Image (cartoon, rainbow, N blue to C red; front, side):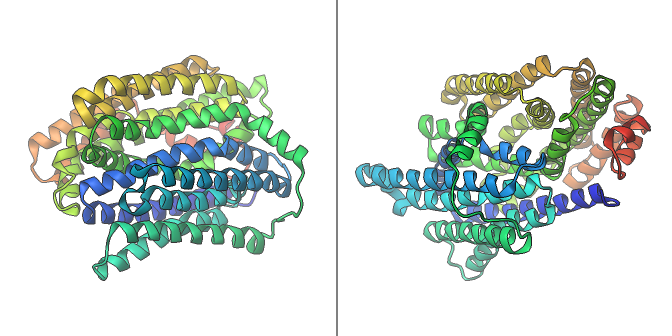
Amino acid sequence: MKKNQLLSDISVSTAQAILNQLSGIIVFFIISRYLDKAALGHINWALAVLMVVFSILGFGLEHIAVRKAATGADPGLLLQSYLVHVMITGIGFLGLAWLAESRITSLRQDGHLFLLLAIGQCISFLAIPFRQIVNGLEKFRALFVMSSSANICKAVLLLILVLMQQVSLNLIVEVYILASSVELMACVIIYKVQLRLPLVPGYDWKQYHGFLKEALPQLGITVFNTAVQRMDWILLGLLSTAIVVAEYSFTNKLFELATLPLLIIAPVIFPKIAKLFADISQKDSDVKMAYLKVLVRLEIVVAVFVAMAVNICWKAIIDPLTDNKYGASTRQIIFVMSFAMPLIYINHIFWSILFSQEKMKILLLIFLATFVSNMAADIVLIPFYGAAGAAFGFVLALCVQTLLYFLQVPSHDIRKGVFHLFPVIGIALLAGFVSQYLFGFFLWQLFTAAGIYIFLLIITKQLLYTDWQMVKKTVKPGNLINQIHAV
């Protein structure tokens, strides 16, 4: 490994996540400000349905491709199988969508909105194989451009429309399609020209069959995981109004944008955990789990701090940016949803461990239980509490998921790390309430809460000096296990 290669990878991943988040924020605030709540609800509901559909069509191949590329599989053969799969399934779905729209009048509302958004999503779907293989090969600079091109294109084009005062639902949909096309072209050009990876002609059905068979256990995992992320949007559309969908989807989208730290480390951490568990020995097992226990605790600290900061700043920032549409009206929703933030971080580590150990049946059952919990909670709560009920159902489903992961992860040490969640959340709630009692201006509240939070974490030993030593050791070049032993 090159000197400081890990730091370089994290820096590139950080830049990618920040740029994507910034572009996403620009896009989301433009469409939230310039579309009425009903139009925003319609477009977000359609995108939620398409997200679930294309996750099903992906057949769980995304993470399989990353793992196989990271462990030395031939990129050309991987791309062969993966690309043909997304072409057949994606174009087939567009045919079904067109047929359904031609026969169901309600699907032709807002100028063929659903079909046009489906076309844009299908184009992005075709770009996924290139990105996933490049991710597995740890070519993070190339991945940076591949993953950022669509969001940058959307942001630039929508800013131009704002300056021209031409923002409309139809033009927004056209921008989405154009951005997806730019993304696909960027992926193909970088993959072939810059990285000089093979676009192998011909096709090997036996290779595809093996790839598909390996991904089969991951299909249910992917479907249920995506459904948990968007089923609340879909059920709100079916059980409530477009305005309620707009308020909830707006809050949920910004909640996802607030997971920036996880987006930074996830593309770097997952391939490394896959390698960490590729050849596990009893001698190193306890050391690895002790390291992951520290990682769980540190991610809890980061996630809870972000959730606290979001709640403090929410109304003061969101209302001016959305012309007073989504700040005060969604404050209760974001507060409830904030309790899911640390669970997402914890579950990502647990998922990475179990996936690296190829425990697909266990993962499938966990995601099935999470999906069922979410569906049941939403069906009961949405009719009575609307968007707040959907938020509570989302948190409840993630609690179920965390508990099931907790029972399956093969080390008592790493399970103990989860219990840090309770004191850290208590500290954050105390810091937030004290800061709001002392000050009225949100920035003073934020600085005060941050100081109280860090101080209490240190004196309660939720943050330790050895944590910093662990971080410094593990980012140095060399074998990860050797670095951990040195702490």
